[in-house]
Image (cartoon, rainbow, N blue to C red; front, side, top):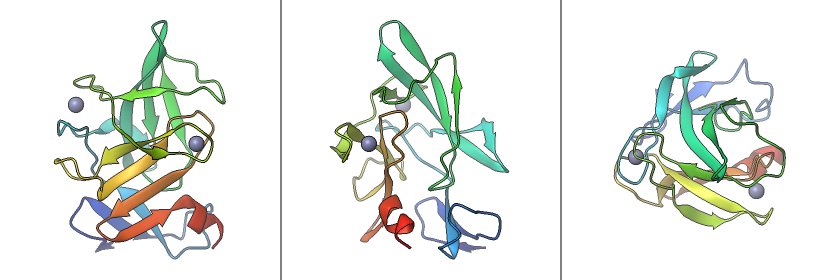
Length: 157
Ligand SMILES: [Zn+2]
Ligand SMILES: [Zn+2]
């Protein structure tokens, strides 16, 4: 086990990770934050031994709930609480603590938005995890300083 960098990200050997069998390491997001600095990692949502990323999600006034995402980059596991997610639905992602909408970082190839979760308590688009806000679209990328890790490049090996 060695540190990937100082931004709360770690790299683990990937014996157990089938989905990422092409790559030698898996990346686990250990910390990510809303723009106000609340940590979105919540130990009540466990994925294997790792604490998940807890987000408040809103589809419209009638549909709101919580979603926990796996902190393992590239892992598609999700748990929804109090809301039924339908494939294709575009969600607003909010901080579960203060309710601030998480900022749009880019446009996804599917037409929805890529939302930024900052890997430092101070918002910086150079250090963030980007995830698509459409249910069923698993486009995600990780920016750390000059490095960019996108799931598309993992898929291509
Ligand atoms: Zn917050
Ligand atoms: Zn998308």
